[in-house]
Image (cartoon, rainbow, N blue to C red; front, side, top):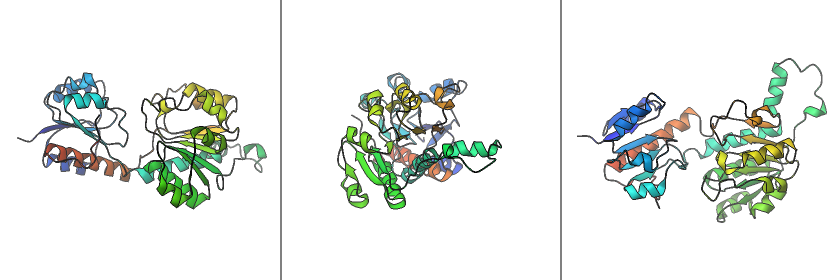
Length: 321
């Protein structure tokens, strides 16, 4: 009998077929109030699950006595309670590397859109307000030859640094848990303290994973350190920032603007003050959201799932502490 697994997100048919060759699949295109009770019932005898964003904690694991592997189709895994997984003897995987370039493209899109006020001016044109030569009050700021500070110089951070240095002649500052000699050599990046990065950067890009150490990493004090002409970009997780402190910094013009792909609550509330601000560009967490990249991520998750249930070490095993 094939081991039973649950796929709890919509995936391409080719991904589903790959899994079904060796495993017995129960498939949910999405989990909602109607499908979640059925999911919990199926979970009782499932040995593996594949998807993203589902909170896998003590409560869920208590309802999954046969579970052996949890496969995230994402690079982040802050939805997983790693100590609880270790306690229950369940292994976990993610999908790193594949999305590096796609996320870096998104981040640079936010940098350019915010600096040059592209969404704002797009609406200005479409609503018929462009009736004469553009006045200075609508001007944006240059990106090229500016200072980009990257907080979290991992694989995605490195891809952002490459675009900034090779394409826009930007000076790269970075802050990380450890030095990244590759990015220093290739892109002339300079390692510095968080405070110095905030003080010197024209663009501050936050790319750290969400951990207890990085929750609200940037707050009132940190925004006060930034230049009044600085633009803040968040492509990590919403909770890495004190959102109220960010709002205040934007309202009082302590910083010039922000480009955000992530929020504390997602989807963001429709009446959230950030959505009313002209100096903020907001995206619906689209970092890796291209068909090509999401297909590769789902297929990597499938490879991890099959390997783990065939007694092999999955290619992208997360170290469970």
